[in-house]
Length: 445
Ligand SMILES: Cc1cc2nc3c(=O)[nH]c(=O)nc-3n(C[C@H](O)[C@H](O)[C@H](O)COP(=O)(O)OP(=O)(O)OC[C@H]3O[C@@H](n4cnc5c(N)ncnc54)[C@H](O)[C@@H]3O)c2cc1C
Image 1 (cartoon, rainbow, N blue to C red):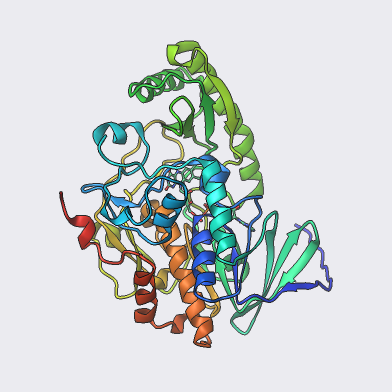
Image 2: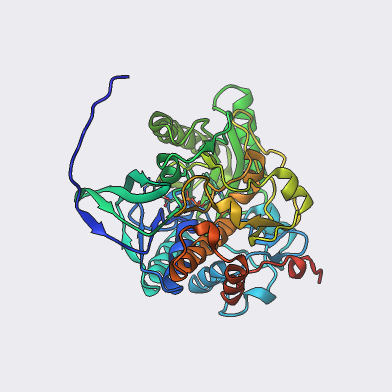
């Protein structure tokens, strides 16, 4: 490949204490926690709204929020606050409630008495806007992180691209919540990427469906028959979930590829839409529940479950997850199944359940850069462990911890985010209502 050299003086548009890159669930957690802990925060996102998966890909539930056996929460703090702001729970009631793992039909059928930590994307957008602005976070949407400039093992500046052109920001600490670990990778940090990363998916919404608990099985039967006849490409699930009763979104499209490869991501959009429409047409033709159904929307974008996994001071392993290994520097718990979507197979895959386990602060510390944290699905974990830790509630918890740690590092004038006092960090997280001890979640009854 040929290359060009390019040089340009960029205006420094901000010098915040903390720059949060990406306002998905991890980024919201990081920005809100850092701002509430006294830091001057700028948060940027390439989209026109915050929420990442919830709003950009269309998801409904905070997975990883509860221990399945008991229905008791393993993540607190900002996840409770988001549920309160969206009207899912009454303020202050979260710790005493029992929740379903998510809005999946089979789960709801199994535990009809448990609350579903489910939201719709528009409520999530509004609650995100409000929590970020009310916390004093400065926001720039439609702003993509384009490059990173490092000097002496630190990030000096982050280059942003938006309608003002290319601009620079010089933060004291950066929190990479881009999901893909863009900042850490471009700062030269080591990362791993599994050969068979989990497939990308575009979700789609169908309105006016007649909803029954049988719907999932019937949709699944139609797809299995079509796949066997070679009429459709590999698909996942399907996992239908509803926001309102007749408005169903389907997690079913499965496109192998790497979201950090621009061509793969483009293909995931184009192939994904083709596949979504094929599925809809099949259901419409074969199922009476779809008689009046309307293909309402796809996307907004195809989403990535797994891409770069930044190598941190500690790497969470599947053994840690399965054996619930305790960590002195625990900053959030995980509890979601080891949910590794295969690239080529169709239908439902094995999702071994796990006990509540510890996620260590060291998994948020990329090696070699002293003023950088990562949070969310790009944290340091093996591919198998990430199949559990990547989900929304735990990502928001990681973000909350990273934001709190960044503010402590700035408040204590530390040279490195590695020097943050772990007891002080944990004590601040507990004050914020976070859960660091699994014993409450293990209690039956
Ligand atoms: C199809 C699919 C289905 C899933 N289903 C579920 C589910 O049902 N339940 C569940 O809990 N989890 C689910 N997940 C997992 C979940 O989406 C993520 O793992 C989780 O949201 C991670 O949060 P995050 O904040 O780390 O990343 P994301 O939610 O991906 O957020 C990253 C944010 O960074 C922004 N961004 C990225 N790069 C840049 C850049 N260079 N510059 C500026 N902004 C940038 C993005 O716009 C986005 O807002 C699913 C994922 C996918 C893809």
